[in-house]
Amino acid sequence: MSEVHPGSLQAWVMAARPHTLPVSIGPVLVGTAVAQVEGGAKILPAIAAGLGALLLQVGSNFANDVFDFEKGADNEDRIGPPRATQLGLLPPAAMKRGMLVVFSLATLVGAYLCWVAGPVIIAVGLVSIAAAIAYTGGPWPLGYHGLGDVAVFLFFGLVAVVGTTFVQTGSLSGLGLVCALPVGGLATAILVVNNLRDIDSDAAVGKRTLAVRLGRSGARIEWAVLVGGAYLVPIVLWLGVGEAPWILLPWVSAPRALRLFGVIRSNEGGPALNEALAGTAQLGFLFSMLFALGLAA
Image (tube, rainbow, N blue to C red; front, side, top):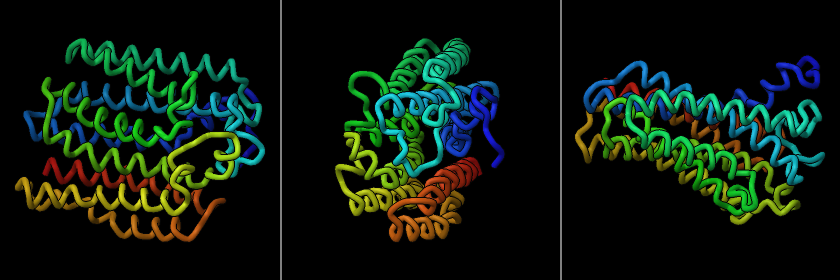
């Protein structure tokens, strides 16, 4: 990897964490597929939903970068990928300005979606921005009190999928709610790997993630339940709701999930869990893409 210079575009790209961004697109694919089933997808609202989701993810990553540094969670003992603020590539003030710019752009996208689908979208967007900041920032950060997993499941699963469907159809969807469950579960599984890897350094600075509270064995069980539960949902939709067998397409990715669990079960930190984190993000995107194809077929 080439040297990253302070204040450079590469530094901002590092802070955006490109390998995490597919987690924001998967829900949009699934929500759009649900919209297609329930009256027809609309291309411009779908694109806007995807852009808004990406901006919220980048803004959240900027917030995590700076607030974890300020709270001491990102220090010399950290074993995960490097962070821009920690390395001095971007000062905290610049990162906060960047976060403000990104969230402002997300608000502009939300204004268009508000025009398309009504003022409730602005409320949802503002709550999403507040949650992204409160995950590691503010006086009572969610991630430091074991609520990060709940927040990710809610906003990267239920809100993202159901919201994407809503801006295209104008109505809430029961099917969308069910389809959001595996998407949220897999997004949360990414966080579980992250917190499992950082369990010792987080505990040392008082960051009481759910992994810290459950311990390594509990975190591994949580990952298995989240991922295993995701693969059960297509079966329920096929056998219980009468969806076509195409809904089982996500099972094509099951061998990858099993390989990842083997890595997570047999490693406690270091490069192996960094690779498992990226692999879980890729799994979530692959599952969502196949799930969307199965729904729309």
